[in-house]
Length: 84
Image (tube, rainbow, N blue to C red; front, side, top):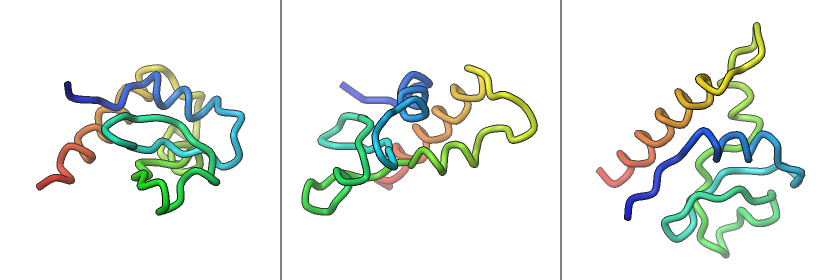
C-alpha cells in the first residue's frame, strides 16, 4: 500500500510541540519526530523540517489548507522520484 504525504502530515509538523520537529519517512510511513529522533542510527529519512516548511509557505499572508495541499503534493512527488 503506497504511502503519501498529506496536508494533515504537514499540519501535524507545523503544530508539533517537539523540539525541532521533522517529517520523516521511516519504514514506509511518514511521521513527525523531534530532532533527537532523526539520527542515522534509527534509519529515518528526513523529508522536511518545520523550519523548511515555514520557508516554503506564503510569507505575505496566512497559509491556507490549499497551500498545505500544494506542498504535500510537491513533497510526495519528490519522495516518489527518489527511487529513480
